[in-house]
Length: 353
Ligand SMILES: *Cc1c(COP(=O)(O)O)cnc(C)c1O
Image 1 (cartoon, rainbow, N blue to C red):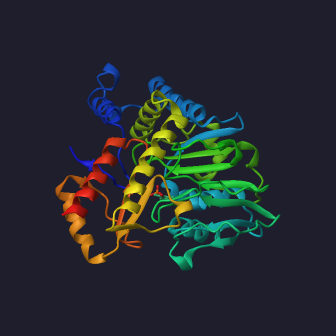
Image 2 (image 1 turned 120 degrees about the vertical axis):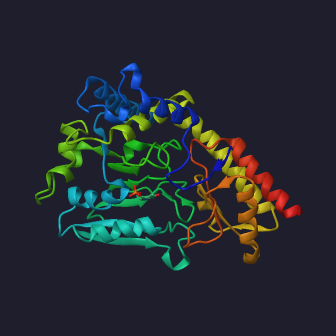
Image 3 (image 1 turned 180 degrees about the horizontal axis):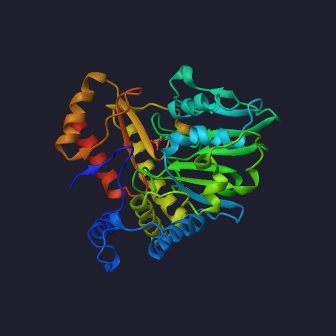
């Protein structure tokens, strides 16, 4: 057994791996692999429908909010969002809280006028700036709810009367939020929902169709809504894996129940980071992410040694992103509390030796 703390693609529940693996060999006793299964079959339409319904149920979405399963990753949403929501002369407010946020800003410039309303770039994105105003004429406020690379997370979502758009790639379904307060949410599936290859978009249908530009067919959310995410061949296996993970999450008791465990996991690891004389956290305490815990060593010279020790003890994926250094332990929904406790024990043992 190994302990996978990768930031994404990342750990999924064991039973999801088992069911997905079985379906690759023989989907539901059909004699066909899920990989050769037609997307226009009633069985796959059922999978897509169930995945959509589970998203709606787990997020508590109202009927204005449509759930889409698209290609292209969260990175495609950086452009698809402004293409659908922003005219060239219109402005939208963006929070510059990390590398992913900065990429979203770069793409928005191609379609409108993104205005950076706050930034923590000069402090290497180690905190979330909260003292900012959103101009009235901003078509929307864009936030990254969890900054995967730096390990910051909005513990209180900023309040605005403007439309809200969020990149939730690394914390979607990890905690209870009022998801209906957002007009658009997007997330690459590979961190908390399933396999790489599919992106979940939740969009309030009432905000669409307001821009003047011609939108290419595949880029227009309205076409994907009309076709039930089957405008072209969807990523069948990735959607199937999402459905299995969503079923698993529902069985755990849903978002509120998983949030409780996620809080325990994060509290356990941060307590050790703070207690252990060798380690320290890298971000403002109030902004600490419950999904990606970033920490360094007081003595940077010891980091290679701890990484080796962790690797020797079957820990995978805790090397920090190159822009932060040190370590990052990703504690997504599927990560059991016992694995976090195991990492904490290793940190203690390393201190004692
Ligand atoms: C991983 C990540 C992305 C990029 O996702 P892709 O699906 O690889 O395009 C964007 N935003 C955040 C917050 C992420 O964590």
